[in-house]
Amino acid sequence: MIEVQNLTKTFNGKAVLKDISFKVKEGEIFGYLGPNGAGKTTTMRIILGLLNPTSGNAFVLGQNLGENEKLRNKVGVLLENDGVYDKLSAYENLHYYAQLYGLSDSVERKRRIGELLEFVGLSDRRNDKVGEFSKGMRRKLALARAIAHEPEVLFLDEPSSGLDPEALDNGEGAGASTLGGDGSYNIP
Image (cartoon, rainbow, N blue to C red; front, side, top):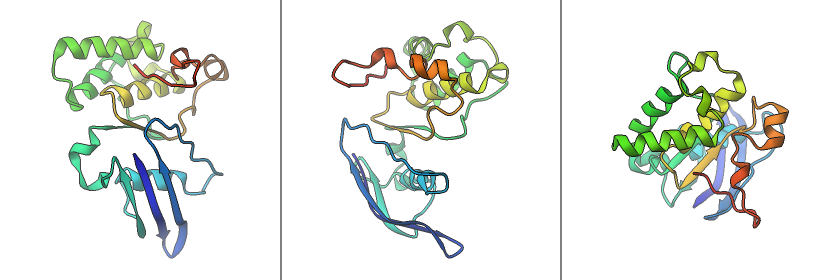
């Protein structure tokens, strides 16, 4: 599903990544951990095709994401920047992204947006402008945006950043209520 082979990245002669390799199989949840400045976000940006490696390869679903536009529709991404628009409501943000992701049937798009807002606990704030949201609420909306098109692969960079301890403890916005007893994780 995801394969990184001998990935190296240098900036101004300084190696940020040195010969990184790993595989993530279908159905696996993979955590890529390390201290600040260790190259986690750089690795993710290379895998996503947003940054070229100095050497090595990164594949998602067997292909280079940076070279295949259609493959990008099979991937959901939540980066450090939430990518939501302050002047739009929560609903309008998801409507905009759902259209970008190709959800052209208006009835299905409306159903999906309602499902996502419920999933992240923002259905009661659906018509509020995102500029009024806390960082945690923005993060929840960004998660909904990342999964709007039901991607095959989901990349989360700092997924709990901005969520308050109570929300983390309750699993709000992270779908803990959909976690199965077997450890499976089902996103709507």
